[in-house]
Image (cartoon, rainbow, N blue to C red; front, top):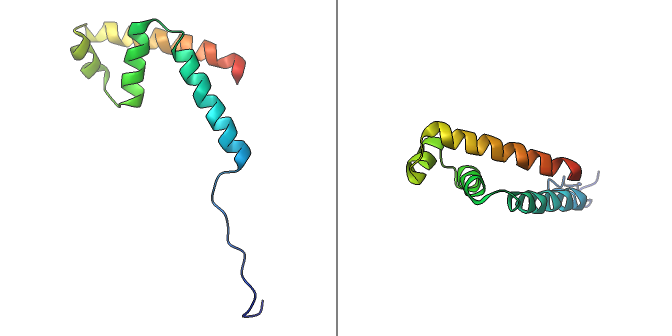
Length: 87
């Protein structure tokens, strides 16, 4: 390669189709979250999008830790079932 030629630069940006798939998956997650009952929906959103622990959530909602874990576990199972057809 001569001094006047430009060397190719690797593009680390995600491909457009990958970005579209990610956007569709994110929209599907929010759609599926909206199908959950209010309590597990808010607990899951707070835990995963705000980074709160189960202990913090149980204290905030004034419920036993085991109850919070059950709500989130059952909510995640429903979320998973909702997401599977779109995967």
